[in-house]
Image (cartoon, rainbow, N blue to C red; front, top):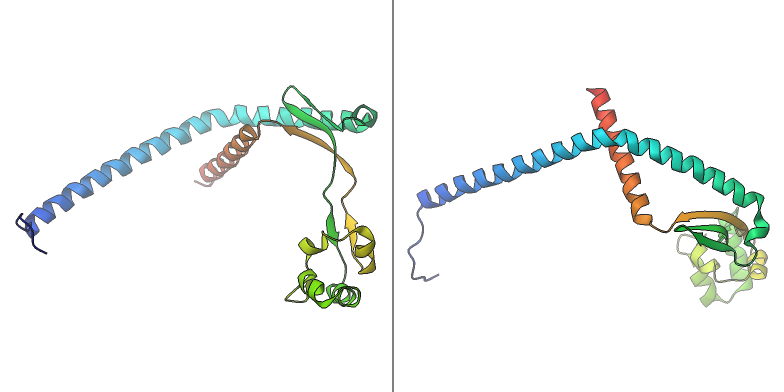
Length: 184
């Protein structure tokens, strides 16, 4: 490689490496300080967050019970959004379940052409739940599969799921900090 600048000496490289190491140490120290401040703030605030979360869970349980006790209020429409909270009833997506993989695979092969059976059966001779979802209830019954969880169920969901995720994260981190402090 031809350059107009002279090659740096090993002493120059050593000096730059020393400065780089000091700069990285400073970055690490500042990150450590930030993490310590965050942990301290979290320890001060986590108790109040836990109390508020417990209160919210208690009110949520009471709200669910009230909705379950008054299904006639949610016939049309099935859900309402009140104060940023979606509540009411929602139909479950359902889950295809079966007892015996080999039996369901044999019945699929019996009742469907080979090309479709290949899609409905996984390579390891297990029925494909995703592919079976495409069949109607009569076809599922023919191959020994039943649907579960398709009835209506109560829904109480905050419209602001970002806050819920943050609260869950803080509670988890707070429990980890508390466990670590308890073990010391």
